[in-house]
Length: 194
Image (cartoon, rainbow, N blue to C red):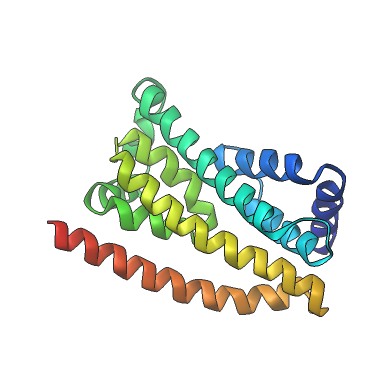
């Protein structure tokens, strides 16, 4: 992991904000690359003075949301032709689709905290025609919390001398707390609407 972190940081050093936007957008849209690791690298760059915090945060959040919405839109418009079989062939996709129909805001929000499900939820939300407002609201809230926590992880790892895994373990606890509170709040809001 340290070698990957060093590679990401070197890539960000050379191309800075353009590399940050492109890599996060692609990881959010469809490329199976860890966008979280890229945001941690950006946090380290902020701590070392290589990036400005507000600009790094804005780019990370915008690229994440834009990539997620791109995945959603692709499946919303082309899903009937190319993606319909996914939901019926997989029990996991079927159960995620069912929950997404019942609680779209909570599902999208919670999926931002479980990195490997975010891309699947983006596609599935488009495929099941989840309301765009619920999708974007859950996506923006979840990505805002995640981007802040991953930037802080990189910042603390670089500025304090702690190892990235050590800081990440602390942040994971905080992330779990925020995920649980956000999920409960989203479920409450959706139940209140019904």
